[in-house]
Amino acid sequence: MLTPRPHPFRALLLPILLSAALLGAGCEESPTGRKQIALVPEAQMTALGEQGFAELLRTLPLNDDPDVRAYVGCVAEALVDALPQPHGRWSIAVFDDPTPNAFALPGGKIGVHAGMLRIARTPDQLAAVIAHEIAHVLADHSNERLTQELAVQGGLMLVDLFAEEPGSLKHEVLRQALGIGAEYGLLLPYSRTHEREADRIGRDLMAQAGFDPRASVALWRNMAAAGGGQPPAFLSTHPSHDNRMEELADDMEQAVEIYRQARASGREPGCIPP
Image 1 (cartoon, helix red, strand yellow):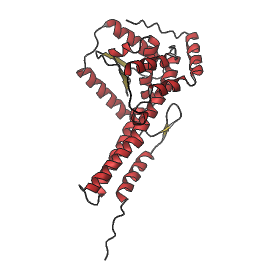
Image 2 (cartoon, rainbow, N blue to C red):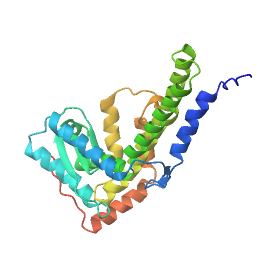
Image 3 (cartoon, helix red, strand yellow):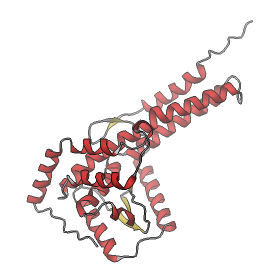
Image 4 (tube, rainbow, N blue to C red):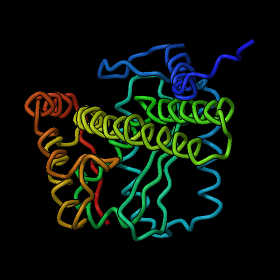
């Protein structure tokens, strides 16, 4: 009796089917209406965010300038106050790090490097930074990214499981091809999508909090001046500075109108730079 020979594409087909099953198990919408898959329970994401933030507080030095902490806290709190209720409690930390960086984690955790104040030179520009990071949390981007990575890892495990000759050159080429395809065809494009989406959500959030959304374009102009060269947009997890400024400028009139309404309603953050 002849033993059927495995189809040469079976090892590639099975991980694709596994990934499709995982990604098809549920579908939600981001705040912009984009379809997204975020399968990790919210409680688990909150726990991961809290654990990560606690580790950063334990291992990284905090800025000891009370004026800097009060300034960053003022901007962040004004943004949190503009979030839909119930938004829970958010924790804010300023790290004594000269690099221009900021982040927000699930569970309401915000971190800002002191070096960001060299780039975000006004309260409105700092609001653009922090609102962008809060937007990643609002849109559940970390959950979506983790779901994608779990799907990719499941696919790679199936390549190993169903390989005709485990450890062979053919197996390794197939495994690397799938990994590269997942990275450049799934993870990086989604990451750029996340960044663009966070720009839009963050721009509107800062306007709702009473910060001038036009400062978001000025912020990225500062970033471009300070950042030097960038990798090609195709291989970057972030849009280029020019693309970012162009996209932020789209629908800016609507964001400015939101800002004017917020100011008229009494939202006038009085945050004073150190």
